Length: 262
Image 1 (cartoon, one colour):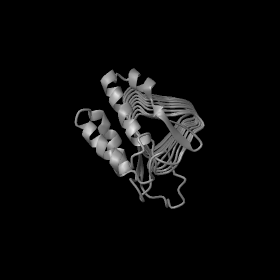
Image 2: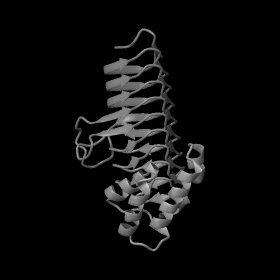
Image 3: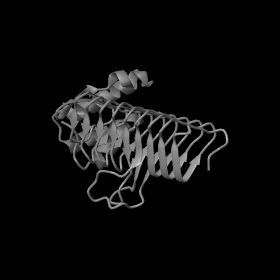
């Protein structure tokens, strides 16, 4: 079903169970095949490939040569019916790859709202990307990675499968991340290590001075106090009674399977 206001270039190929909403544009030589839904106002530029079972929300901009919903690169994948779900107002730049999920995990790959995925970023199977994130040029999110809201993963960085990248954290360019990055933390290097808090990001996103000071104290409890992680967590529990922003740090410490960067 293609809405009468959608603008489809004559050279585009559309096949399968495809729903295209009002005011969508599809550029030349784009290929859309499968069970696909594209929301109102989304712009799909030239030479884009959208396949599989893929849902794309409203007002997204998808640049040339992006590939969305293609079979993933997991050797265990056997053609099962897995999905990609993309929210609203995302900017998906040239040659970004977003692969469908696997039945061994969530069976879906999810991109939230208001994200910027830069040139040639790779979003592998079963990755969950939150809202308002910035994924840099040639960044790699390995399978099963989770990226929290307002996080940044800069150019040429690689995130190991099953790692968590915390909300409001910032992973600098050319980093190799093999363990979890706590919320609010500035990470850099190969392998990535912590360099304090992402203060610029916190200030830009409206964190007040008392809250930032509390987060700095929490960071010191974890990384500079000499305490065991269990003792540091006990201190954070008390701090979280006054500052809710401490809670995401505690939550990641509880769920972390690979440990946190040190």
